[in-house]
Image 1 (spheres, rainbow, N blue to C red):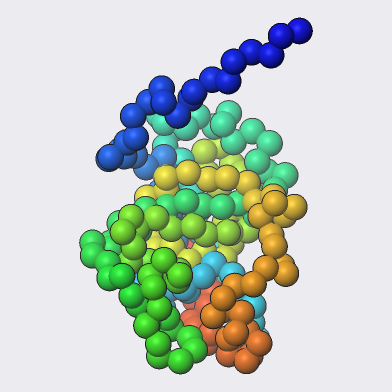
Image 2: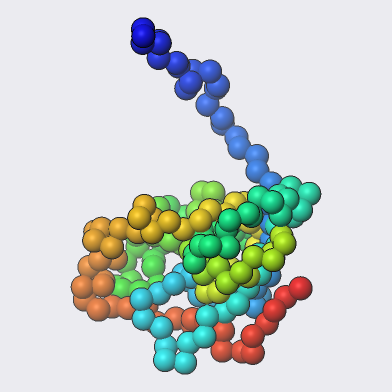
Length: 191
């Protein structure tokens, strides 16, 4: 059988100089202000009295029908890709909250102030109910727009032996972030 000529997919469409997205859902979280909201959805060491915050992600049915969530309930974790809508400006360098007070390149940190304020959170999926995802361990404010979700797949999403630059150095020095983490208030179940 003759080999077919290679297709030139990248030449078929011009490079997009602007990208337009619409939210597919919204986060209902107990966190209503930046201060006191965890900086990550998961941390290595948490306080002894830690209780992960409970949140709900509601998908807009007119955009994402419930059938699109079929088979998601079997996953322990999902990635939530969000738009950090309160961030209007960014700087090319920031000072991370842990370790020495050294400015780092913004793209070498997880700072929310970014050229495109896209958030990426790995959260525990507690359940799927229609167009609602019940989540645990959230680092997003109430009313955060959701752009997409993807299942967390451990064989390709986890690289425990990966070097993480200056973060690996902080870990070796046992410089763990001390942060308000979880929800010390009664469990809130938004509607």
